[in-house]
Image 1 (cartoon, rainbow, N blue to C red):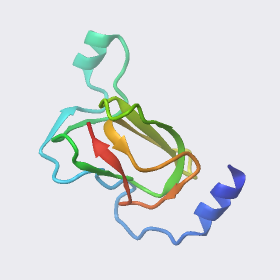
Image 2 (tube, helix red, strand yellow):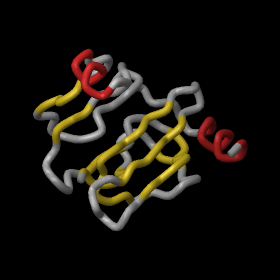
Image 3 (cartoon, one colour):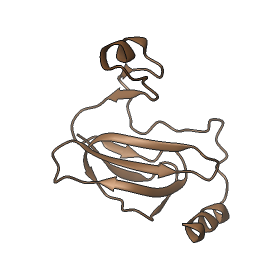
Image 4 (cartoon, one colour):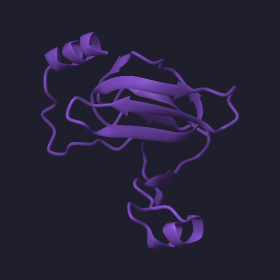
Length: 118
């Protein structure tokens, strides 16, 4: 992992105004927001992300540069997920993927295809 982090740090910095890019396009509806109180009441745990509504098989992209840490690809049954770690301590997690096109250890760039929505 240390070698992967060093390689990632050598990539040129993104010159974007925001730390994260949207992981899919177009954004039609955000179903659950960060810190959604109703989610916490219903499931008993805080919601620490956002859930974006998307049609099946919509391309999903990396929100920023990182190293793929974990991928669960369960034969396209729609509950696949991926975790990407970033050099500054942030982690992005992509749930409800129909299919992934990345594997652990891959270095991904902001906007790179990582899979398709489930």
